[in-house]
Image 1 (cartoon, rainbow, N blue to C red):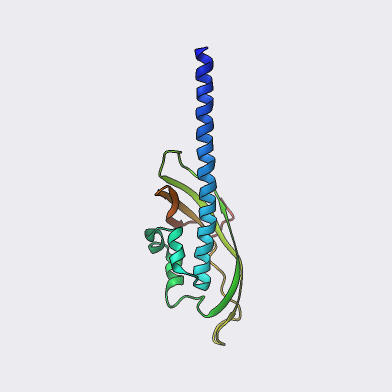
Image 2: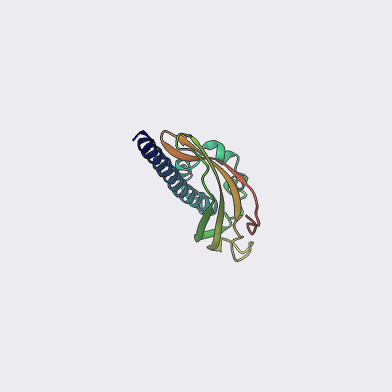
Length: 161
């Protein structure tokens, strides 16, 4: 009788851990997909910068070299009237425990098509390619929700995981 109770308790415990793992993974995927899409939108089209704070800590944006280049007055995309782009991410397994406030993973951030036209005759007719890159990402839980705390560029080739 006691053995069955222990087995049931262990099974329920494993189910709870699996549920929280799945929930954290789903939340991380949504956050990373939406956050990196907003980042790409800002980098390419200068959408509302305040929206980035819903997805990124100030520290992560300050240390993001590509974001800082695109944010500068010398951004290569300011010479174009960009009207749209195709964005996607792939992501690794989220490494976290249900009770942890930190999680890590990697993502492949891709913009495969940029629609736009030059604002002057002094630049190429098509916008330059986006910096597709694999990033190591660290998430932190703040007030019960995940936010991107660190984004570090890794492999730009992305052909070798």
